[in-house]
Length: 316
Image (cartoon, rainbow, N blue to C red; front, top):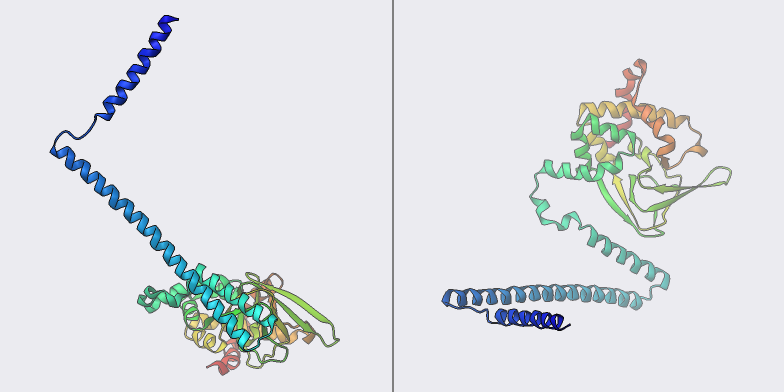
């Protein structure tokens, strides 16, 4: 027992001695003092920089939040001053909030200054990479990507724009003259048409599956057959038919492919009963049939170019 106590005393004595020795460790000459001073100064400067960066970021974030809150306050004040209905006011505020959140996640291309430094070809290739994954849902555009990349670049850079829709916005109404072809980038729309018997037909339009108002690319007389309304905040790719015709006709291979396609497309659409026609083309239903429009027999091939030129002449 005595031996155990002596061992415990010896242990604690050794620990206290080591602590005392550690406490005595300090710079012993000029070089060590300068080194210790440098370490302390560097630590203070580094710590001040980190604290300053955090404070600056918080101040910037606070300023952005205050600016956004002020903008919404001015918007609400404007709506109240002009006695806008509560329903419309709520729609406007919700849509503006959606757009701001979308811009925070995806900065608009026009706000990226470095993109202005790109050459015309690089900009065309960039626009092609952005647009074509959406348009490739249509077999004709998927084939054009293989046949003529130059044409696809031209379409992406000159013929395609974007269009935003708020919830419950209508894209077109029955009887309205069609002006563009559309592809859904995100969101969901609902299409409604009434046939000659008064029966209503409804279709959901989603991204990655469907395309809208294709006949406007091949004829100027297409009238919308139904009503298309956005169910959610949506974004669409908009293809201008006039620019489409001009760009496609610049390349012989692309023009030949389009000529082949339009001959069969017009022949098929003229054979369909009016009650079966629609502004919406469901890819899973008509995709295989549309893909077959790019093949001609020998007799059809002889008249394809002349007939296609007549059909597309209005676009020149």
